[in-house]
Length: 332
Image 1: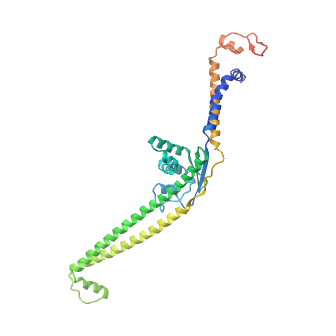
Image 2 (image 1 turned 135 degrees about the vertical axis):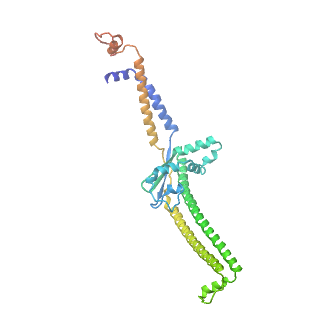
Image 3 (image 1 turned 120 degrees about the vertical axis):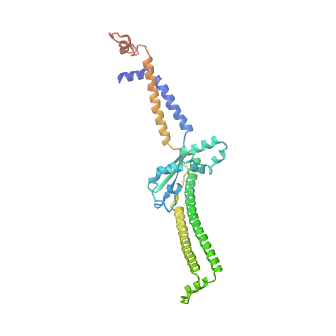
């Protein structure tokens, strides 16, 4: 350890100069040109909502509620996706600077790199942005929060519309089938007026003999039963459609009120020191390693004699004595 300290003392400038280059200059540069300002908004999610499943295309009525805390990784993937980032860019001044694909990709990567999404407890999501100044940080944090809520509500509305469309199309199919059977039955009655006897007998419970051929009677009964069945299916479809609309309306209302901003982003008073301190620490470690490496290389490549141990190692000679000079430097 003593020899190491002697080497560092003797070659201190070989350590200090690389250390300053690798630590002081980058630190000053980062302090002047790489300062970041952080602004964040806090979103609240009610217990009975599940956002990521809705954004993935599942119906709101079919998803199992889960907390933001349990979905934080999925949120990070979804909200840093190109689809979401492009929606954010379209609502900011960056939209005007997307004239080329290169600029577009640069803007997307800038947002992805500086947008942060963190779970804060089981029901809160922090949307943070690290901007070049406080105004930019507030703008992107606010826009990202608004786009997120809008994105979720649009997804809920889209899924509900698709669900309603499915039930409406099914109902329309049953109605079309019912109309077809009714037209067929009406035409059969017109072609066979004697079927009126069957209608009156059914209504009045008459015991008078019926002069209707077995074929006509059987065909009439078949068409009548098909009409009743189609009527029941159509009525059931109407009921299902009404229930679906009621459920979708409730789901829409729930997501409209259950997902909201509870803390708006506020312009920071000073730049964020977290990344700056981390950058300084890494620069310090790198500068320390660089300085030591320079000293070690210089020491191993230097063939001159400085200490008594150098005489033994380089010349393989015995040292008889050491004489100190007036400046307290060792000489042979």
